[in-house]
Image (spheres, rainbow, N blue to C red):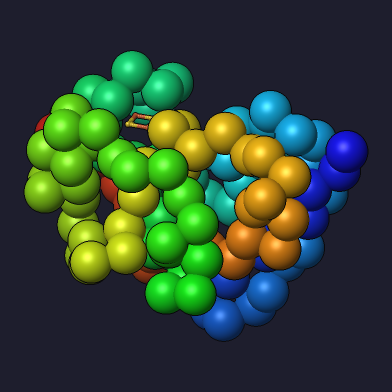
Length: 111
Ligand code: FES
């Protein structure tokens, strides 16, 4: 089944993307041209895949792991509905999921 997700770019543009169930949100975002580095490729070691989930969708996602929460503490501009995109695999329940791409998502750890 296909799952539609929406990305709100830092400039406010909304981009819709069609994905498949089981696809990873980070990969879908990158394939849609979103500026998310995802430096560690899903190893929860960078936080450059940080996205801000819209409040109406935040509760639909599986709880973040402790490791994910620790990484989010380091993410620039993280808020109460922040998640790591690499930790979100799309399911049919997430059809319509909308996330914001933070303006600054560079890897500060590598500097
Ligand atoms: S890609 Fe590094 S934490 Fe998600």
